[in-house]
Image (cartoon, rainbow, N blue to C red):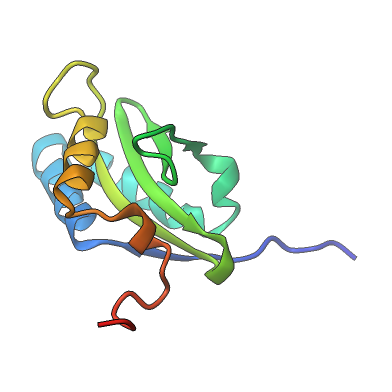
Length: 124
């Protein structure tokens, strides 16, 4: 009897969704649709589809599609993938997706540790 891989719930954060809509406007429906399909495909074996990032983005993973990157967090304990950001990778550019995510982490807009909490409002 073969074992089926665990199915993960895939969430797209509001900021990531806004980034996807900007990509659709700038690069077209085909790129937008391809990225959405890749994101939704993270429901199965996400750890094998992306690479773990190093500090200061440790705890996040990156999935590559052409010059675009999908930045996501895997929460193994609750079988969940949270898409944090989506954007163009262009080393040295202020708009490089890794630079954008680092700025969001530094400003507190993205809290990598909090992304792992299945109920972030429980302590408020």
